[in-house]
Length: 439
Ligand SMILES: Cc1ncc(COP(=O)(O)O)c(C=O)c1O
Image (cartoon, rainbow, N blue to C red; front, side, top):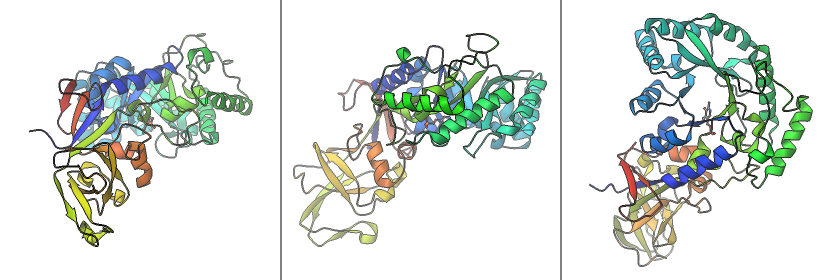
């Protein structure tokens, strides 16, 4: 049966974003796209072939996400962004680690007990675990504190069953216009790399000729120059023992915001998530990359009727009609990820016109005011989320209205939403590439 809620996911937009991000990287810099949480809610299975074609690695949060990517045939590296050891205990944890190691998943380590646990699990499956050490340089969340990183690296190196593949950090506020904290994190990361005596290749940020200039790039160059002055490190001056070649050890730090605004953070690999799916990391970005949102959410009007002036609607009767009105019911609610805090604030598009939602968003339904769209009828398509970032009902627009971030809007899309990979939004039947039920 046709699902009443359809998320069209644009293959073309995803390819466009991935190419755009890749073009900002110097040759040789690896692209690891964050695909956790079902590709930020868009449907990982649907996107997997395209991602696999364009990226060097995928990033996930949980052991299940990592193993399921292997089961779906991904042969590229998979990095678990968080410590696998936090996802269980005892025999259950040992089995999970063994499974991850057997599936060649890159594990993140942040402490000594984890080094021992992972080495033990690797011995049990007679394999070598490939690990990245994550260092906290000012995010204050996960990662070994920078001053303790050298001892942890020593411990990893002392374990024959562990192979150190990467060393990384995560930025707390790269999406803000003020880059001071991010540049401080980068400086701390560099010091940690030096303290750990890790091989560093050239620190060079992508040469301007390697990047396609975007609006705002001159502000980025000014930020880079200031950072060079402050850190005392002329980018490009530091050379590794292995000359200009990139070292086998992957150094990485950049999320979407840093990838776009701060080329000096690219190092050996970047880890964008939100930008790959077409959303600006924030309204404060210095560079406005022409990203294309990959999502359009539609439903169908399931009922249309009159609402007299003075009548009220929805749970809590939180809207009163001030004129004789026509209302329609849209089968989307907070169970589908349409946030309840959008009550009396959002709009949807019907027959090319924007119509305001009225009353409390409920679990399964939303009331739409169709008074100014008099021709609207049962069965009409309703555009609930627009792929045009300028629309008030775009992911970014709804995030602004709800006081949240685009990440939350897409991650919350529920299982009742049918994800459909399309070549172009609103395309004709037959143009659809693939369909996945719910997640
Ligand atoms: C460790 C790590 N790297 C990269 C990302 C991607 O971040 P963004 O979606 O802001 O690009 C995340 C996302 O939370 C993360 O946890």
